[in-house]
Length: 331
Image (cartoon, rainbow, N blue to C red; front, top):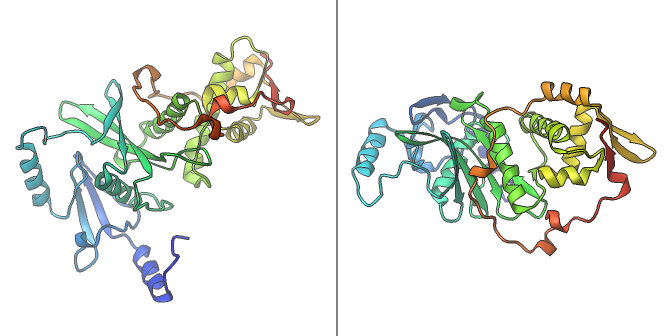
């Protein structure tokens, strides 16, 4: 319970404070974004009236400023420095580059301030986000657009370093200034590419918000239709576990997506996918795999090593499919 330990007075104060926004506008790089929700920013940032008209953020360090001149003075000082201090990208390691898109992996333990500030920013735009002040157990993946000026963050997702329930994504946000570009689905696809590298199945943190479902259902349905149509070879039958092993999508999410598509049949206690070639082609038009797509050949990343025998989400620890899982795809 996030309110555990609060007495009645503290709880009432918490409710009053969180009712209203405390930041009017966020300025990140060349973009100004109207905020949507309250964020529990560090008290030293808040003025007496408890409201920041514009929160200025240095896009490379994510340091916060309440006055434009303070941001500019900081940037002049940093960019005039030597010995690599004028870094124009997030901290951490660049693990993906394709065209003008780049992805950085950050360890919350090693880059604590940057990751905490990322959470503060996310809370300005996410109503359901539980803010993790303790970012140490998490990895953060920051998506950037690259140009001659540097690496400009456009969104991110986080995940636990080790999840005992198989979650491969905890929180996801595309900044409002860069929405409608397909970056949300790109971040989701990226989380599954890492699961493939780990040879695991994964799923987003549950329960999912309505916005989360709106983001994930199109990814699941388009990925599974594309797999059945283009990647299943000549197989006329396969198990849900076979699909899970190839896509790294958890079995329960595959069943949900197949039901959404209307092609999962349950006959005599056995699941079947029944879809003729023409029907799958029609579904592919209705549920397309959209760009930008993740190019796995551009991903340079080594997963954390866990004990496969103890990790029930490791694909190599999966037992052969039982008959009740069997599905048939009629092409």
